[in-house]
Length: 287
Image (cartoon, rainbow, N blue to C red; front, side, top):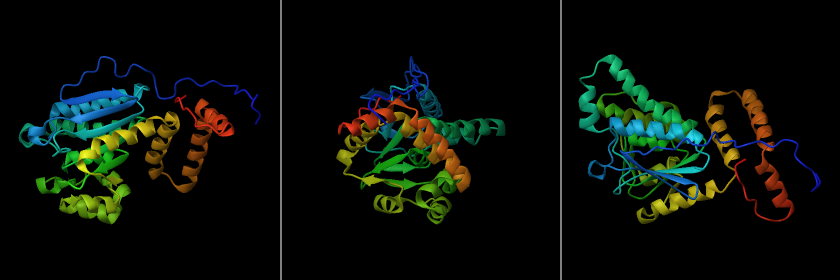
């Protein structure tokens, strides 16, 4: 391949159309973007960042809009006040659900599962920064992220069965076995017990444990590192990690062959080659 070789095709933006976040101003969660990294903060510290109907709706809308926000290349999800999230608010949600009819209950559970669906669909790599309590729906949100950073204070519990519910909430029965293994997932989902930080790292739930005072800075730095990489290739990796669990080996190999060929048609692939040839660091642009 010569330096004069010219790629015959010029693909446009590959992370979706722009403008997805235009006019979006959440009220129940905090949202900010800096250097291509978005930060979502669950902010109800007086209730350990318990989730409400409104916060579920804003999270669903935010992650849906991220499909059309190529300016955001990675996202950190965290909680305020030294806690991640205690899950669904007992009074705002659970107290009202016991008085709700079946159609209303299905509408609610479909809304919560839609949050996870959009988290897995959005092209950005999601990094959960988990301090303190991470329970119930909060644990499901952390699980739905691509990477998880905890602290020695982190305590995780999928405590749905302790509330008289099944452990199969917000994708937990599908996602948790992939992260920690089937046997360990069964233990956590059947018992609803707390998983302490060191156990969570040993079992693979946490990718890293860092001191609490360094948590957000570490998660942002990791996200910035990812954001500086080949955005389309990373989004393709995320998509294939998600899809290939439902494939046999032959189907997965063919899917990967097609996915990799698509990545080879990007400018970032060409940039990487030319930087390698020049012994320079590639400057990826996501196209």
